[in-house]
Image (tube, rainbow, N blue to C red; front, top):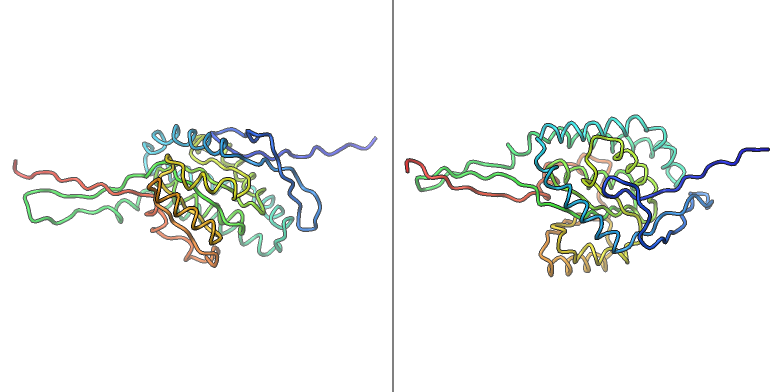
Length: 287
C-alpha cells in the first residue's frame, strides 16, 4: 500500500507559540501553477489584540538586553536563514519566482539581518549626542525603543520585505506585531519556524496571516501600538492608517510600492531611527 504524504499545517507565530486563528477560519493558498498548497489561518482582530499583549509582555525584557546581545541574536537568525537557504529558495520558486530571483532574495534577506546586527551596538553613538548649551549644564540625548510596533509587509517580496521592516525595529529593543503578505504568506510561516528555534525570546516578533481589509483598521487604531511601519499600501489603506494613527497618536512610516528591496538603499541607519524615541537629560555642573 503506498504511503500517503503528511501535509503541513501552517500556523502563525505569536507569543513564542504556533497558533490557530481564534475564529478557526482559514483561506486556501495555491502555488504558481494553480495547485492547492495549504489552508492558511485567517487571523482576526482578536488575534491581533492577543499578539499585541504578547509583544507588550516581552518588551521590557527585550529592551533591557544589551545591544551586543541583541546583535548576537539577529546574527544567529541570519545563520538560520543561511542554513535553510535551499528550502526557502524552493518555496519562493514554488510561488512564482525564478530560481535566480529566489536565491537573490534569500541572500539579501540573510545579509540584511547581518547588516542590522552589526548596527546593534553602534547606532546609539551615531544617533545620540552631547549637546552644547549656554548654561552650566551637561546636556545629552539618548535613544529609547518606542515599544510595540505594527508592521504590514508588502505583497512582494514576501520574505525580504518582511525581514527588511522587522529587523531594524527589533535591533533597538522594540517588539513587533507583523501582518505577512496576503498574497504569499507561506514564507512568513517558515520565518516563524526559524524564530521559534532561534535565541529570540517569544513575543518579540509575532507573525499574523490574514486579510488586510480586516486587520489594517485595527492596526491603525490600536492604542498600544506605538508606531506602524508598512509597505505596499493602497491609497485607501494608507488613508485608513493615517487617520487611525492620528486618532490614537502613533508614528507612521510608509514605504512606496517602488521601494527597491534588493538594493542597498533599502537598508540604512534611519530605518532604525524610525523605531526610536529621544530623551534629553540636563545635568547641573558645579551645583
